[in-house]
Amino acid sequence: MYRLVFSQVLQRLDAEAVHHSTVSALALLARLPLLKRLLHRLFAPHDPALRVTAFGVHFPGPLGLAAGFDKDAACAEAVAVLGFGHVEVGTITAHGQPGNPRPRLFRLVRQHAVINRMGFNNAGAVAAARRLRRTRGVPVVIGVNIGKTKVVPEAEATADYVAGAKVLAPLADYLVVNVSSPNTPGLRNLQAVSLLRPLLTAVKQVADATPRRTPLLVKIAPDLADEDVDAVAELALELGLDGIIATNTTIKHDGETGGLSGRPLKARSLEVLRRLRAKVGDRLTLVSAGGVEDVDDVWERILAGATLVQGYTGWIYGGPLWAARIHRQLLRRVRRHGLKSVTEAIGRTA
Ligand SMILES: Cc1cc2nc3c(=O)[nH]c(=O)nc-3n(C[C@H](O)[C@H](O)[C@H](O)COP(=O)(O)O)c2cc1C
Image 1: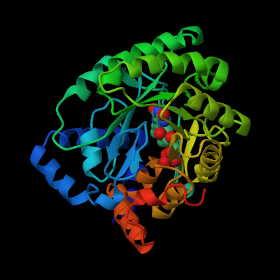
Image 2 (image 1 turned 60 degrees about the vertical axis):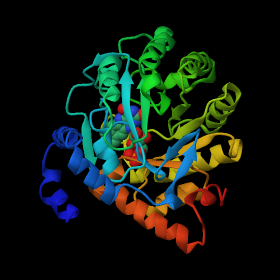
Image 3 (image 1 turned 180 degrees about the horizontal axis):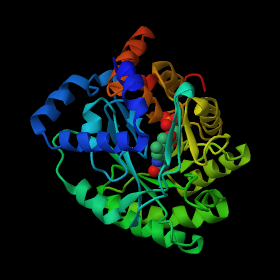
């Protein structure tokens, strides 16, 4: 049904217009408590066998929505009631900014992929904080992904991230330092350990100072050389970070300028996950994102060592109840393997 609607209607409309309409519809849903609770009962993961605990946070299921969809924390609850086990909002920058000129979002339908060069369009940390403070009608785990404000020079990047973290860390179930988006000039240079160490050290001080000590993760690009993946992993261990999200979009493609996501990213994302697991074992929580399309992908990532899995492009092509469907299938898979919980599968083939 969704495939028909996608090919006959959505695919013909401007991708960003569809995106904004979807966020608005979900923001409306987030304000309808009865419907929200009903959908939550129907579609959110409830079975204890799907629960995972990472860095002290309890997730109802391992599959969450990756950053970039709910950039302004406008509709996280509504996303959760459609079956996602967590929602990562953002990227949010300390100061609001318009992002790059349109068009900046392109579907590659045959490849089940997307190219985007959004450029962190968002209303800024204070506006997002106002939304995050609203009481939640249904339980939802919200990660907050922060990035650098475009006009801030690289030399002042740490202060900019710290400003965002101060506002948002107290409101986040976990905080992510995003140094891997390709659409903010120079951002990915911050993945070099010499720049990343002072940045992560400063943000960690902020995250550690919140009443609950907010868990801190770093999100990396798939285009890092293998030695650089190792170097970031070592740094994360050294600094006592809680985890790594791998990966963001890739610039290795020959389409429109921007980051490529979806099916073509699958192999490299899995490769980076395996490399990280080999390096850090279970000392860090690994969150795998990139080209996750179905339950087989989710299962493969979990077996390879991911405690949590994220998807975005797979949802675009899979339809609104994509995550609910995958969690249902995952539960069957867990039972078929005679496991008591999905947790028992983490890292089994690593
Ligand atoms: C339209 C779009 C916007 C995105 N924006 C962000 C962002 O703001 N911050 C971020 O960390 N990742 C962003 N991403 C990357 C995703 O979070 C994810 O890491 C990547 O798309 C790989 O997952 P996927 O193949 O399931 O989409 C974006 C992805 C897409 C498709």
